[in-house]
Amino acid sequence: MNAPVDVINYKNGVLYMEEMPLHPLTSKVGTPFYCYSTAALRNAYLQYSRAFADRQALICFAVKANCNPSLLRLFGQLGAGADVVSIGELRFAMKAGIPANKIVFSGVGKTKTELTEALKAGVLQINVESESELKLLDSIAQSLSLVATVAIRVNPDVDAGTHKKITTGKYNTKFGVACEDALDMFMLAGNLPGVAARGLAVHIGSQLTSLEPFEAAFTKLAELVVELRTMGQTITRLDLGGGLGVKYHNENIPAMSAYAAMVKKITDPLKVQLIFEPGRSLVASGGVLVTEVIHTKQNPERRFAIVDAGMNDFKRTALYDAIHRIVPLVEPKLSNKYSYDVVGPVCESTDTFATDVLLPELKSGDRLALLDAGAYGAVLSSNYNVRLTAPEILVDGAKFAVIRKRDTYDELLAAYRQPNWLGL
Ligand SMILES: *Cc1c(COP(=O)(O)O)cnc(C)c1O
Image (cartoon, rainbow, N blue to C red; front, side):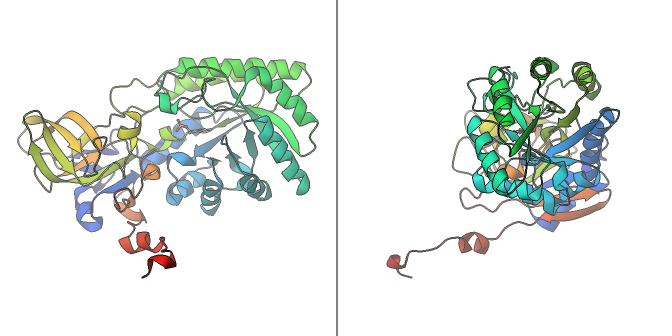
């Protein structure tokens, strides 16, 4: 999936997001900053909701991809629910107006405190990933005189064909329970008055670029539904996990229509409610990271552009070997291109955004945009090297608003304490 071509593109050599030229924003808010397009976000959500409008389906935005409350509010207003993996995310989603009865609580290690708060809040469903968690949830629910609606997350042992660090559906990963253990989980749940197991959930990984792994996992899930029903279990819901991958570079991403047709073919005979938990595909293409060139330099082997965004602002290249397109905010008149390594200021060699990328000749003060940065960008940022996290901006037509301010050194320092024996 990709942003519609007219949302982020050049007009007369100037990079625009919707009706907003990006380069004047650099003097208004300083660099680096994240910038998101309302139209692109809305369009991405509508692709899912329209594809499944003729089915009983709930699209739950995976908050971990981007937890900015303005984005959560936007998706919530469009009808989205949320998929949360911590109580912090649950609070963010509810504060942004997403009702608890549209929120799914996922995650392999939910604590007693978290489960208690989620139950009290009245979340739609808790996806359980172990027998230990099922028993804990039961005891909490009983103590609150509640019954927790549960889906059992299965690990279908299917290779998602994606980066190792975002593969979650193989037995060598910590996620879910094996399909052959699902029946035991349902039987156990049947004896626990605090839980009602009514669904199955699956999430095999992120940035999937083909339909086959999804199809293999969903087929296993459907077979399991039939088997469980034969054994007398009630299954009313299937949670199909994260969404499609996005085109960062040269990936071929299946069309939403093909994904939807595949899902419907497998799930229609089951007559279940569907839950989707897309994160990346809702926000990636609608966001850019804008940065300024601090210095350029050359050594006998390479030409470097050192920019003011670092791996503390954007970690995907360091963490997942991700390749993102990088483009100038203002296209130069001359079209000569040079091969650059675009690197940040952080004291690590992994602080590299692109290797051997063709760009016009750069000089200090030039601004660049790293594209498709809306997912797993700002959320993974840190204050490493005591650097201030980048602000976030939302554009809507010709309007813009700062939706997260840059923090300050005083705010960072204020969190620290000194033991009295060090003196002051
Ligand atoms: C990360 C995650 C998602 C979102 O995956 P995307 O690839 O970003 O769509 C959904 N569900 C669960 C359980 C996750 O861990």
